[in-house]
Length: 565
Image 1 (cartoon, rainbow, N blue to C red):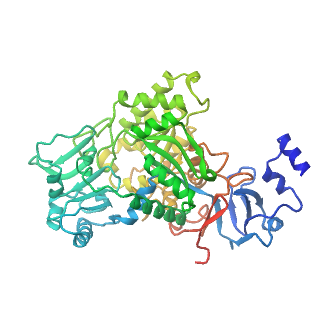
Image 2: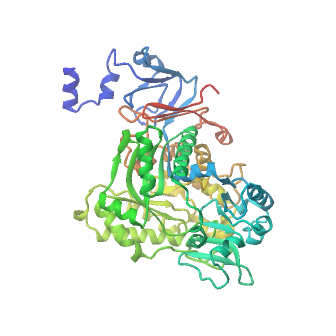
Image 3: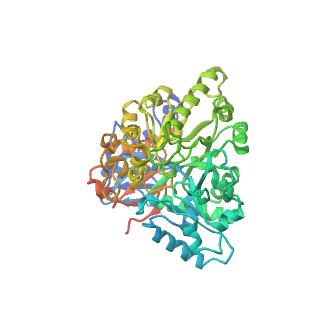
């Protein structure tokens, strides 16, 4: 013991490194062996086994050397050749939304308007007359023709129920006439700032509400109860862990949800790590700015240090803010805030050491955001900032960027937080929305990396399905799940497999200020591990989509086990 104390005081070895060098180290609690371990540690890129104790990695090496960590109390897992990667992290996720998707009418995967209407009609038949019918997940670009549904479509199947159905991206909803009537929306109703009530040729609302116009009806929906939210969080935890996620960056919540999350952690009912961003500008934002960050509660499972703001809409629903008009719509989208409205929050966040993550999709929104970030940096000198480190402010999505603005990310040290699945879904309509010229700055992953950026990879679930293998495949293939890419989709912007793995591990950890604690498999880091059924680093692209999670470990605890299947 004296030897160990001396070593620690001298700062020459971590506890984990010390134990790895001993003849008879203290037994591990968990040993994974006979696997193919991709560590993302340049000094030891491959291994066969990992040993875990007290929630940390204490050994990485060969299966034969791992035996000295085994004892009667050790859980030893024979991986039988399966692949181990650092615990996967989704850097843009809506945790409760994933749970609610499991609870509500899920319209993902509808292949036509008729299919969509059939699913809604079935839910109407199960719902008491006059009660709301709600759902989410439809994407009209997968239909033929690629046209938004209308209130008349819904009126035909739901004349006696108000209906509110949100597009997958969350930035548009279609409602029926009953819902419009309840909200007092007619041809004279003005568009709210940052929103659009779409109309037909006669000037009548056609049922489509874009961005802030959704709130005109959405405010009438029965709010979910505390019990509903708890159920959603637990369902999201279960699904996320089963997919191999060990952490998600939860993009935009309130303190009501955070307080419930804390209780569930205290009751040991939540297992995943949550990196929470408070949605703003709001009273919750002001609370975070006043109280400051909360970092690493519950063995590092909960951190609250970020503000999430959305400044434009989505490309699919034609609300993303563009420099020039849409090629297929007589508008250039919507900016939801002016710089005067958000700059006080930006400056205060910089002073208080609060991270910002701001949703920007269109090229006008991305240029505006970079301008606003730069203005805040210039106006708040380092001496006024609580933290002297890089604030690691983030641009969430960064989907359509003017080529002139791409180099500004590295110059300003702004982290592009991007979702590969958006690109393989959007490829079916982005060309018609933007025209070929603007695709040059669309989903420019490789360009941004070569310019010196790290990309935090996410899924934006439940906007997308939120499955890590879909995201990894999309990043390395840049094709849809049937292998289609289409002409002019810039295949040079796809990433290597190592880059893709870093997007969902080490680079996501960096975006959360946690790269020294997680994101790679090396001594002393948190024991967050994802075990996969196949070698995604070498297998054919199409086989990546067939790969599944076999085991998930968070903080040394096996939280999902499917090894026997």
